[in-house]
Length: 177
Image 1: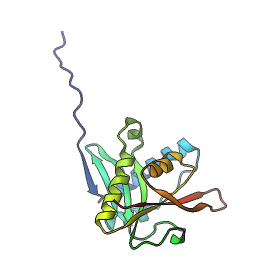
Image 2: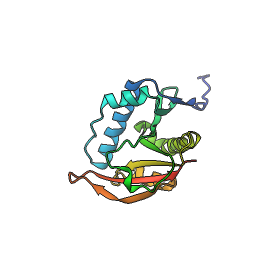
Image 3: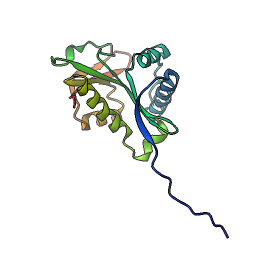
């Protein structure tokens, strides 16, 4: 007879943090990029580890950590992190910029809403730092990410841009809150 009592697993410990380990951040970004490329049949972006190191060193990378590692992350900056100028956006006092939103691929199907939680956290941090809006760039062909941003109150500013090599971008903005 087996005397083992089965208990459901307890809640996973989670905490928000400003990231300090660029290697860990870069690894999550790359895993997310590979997952997204396979899902959508797109090329895997080539991330620059030096950019990741710079973003981590300047305290711009925020993450939700679980006991087993980084679950999700985003970067919040005050300078536009994309090549397209900011002319597509309406004039505002102080914009914040959301980029590098990544969720651990193995957690995507668990219904944890990690992407939603990251975007909401980014909006709150931006507002607390004095931003009136949060801006971002998205690939409109990555429909899940674009739909998430639109559901969370982001609105497209300007047209869809195409670089001529098949890379398309839209620019979005939402109130910081």
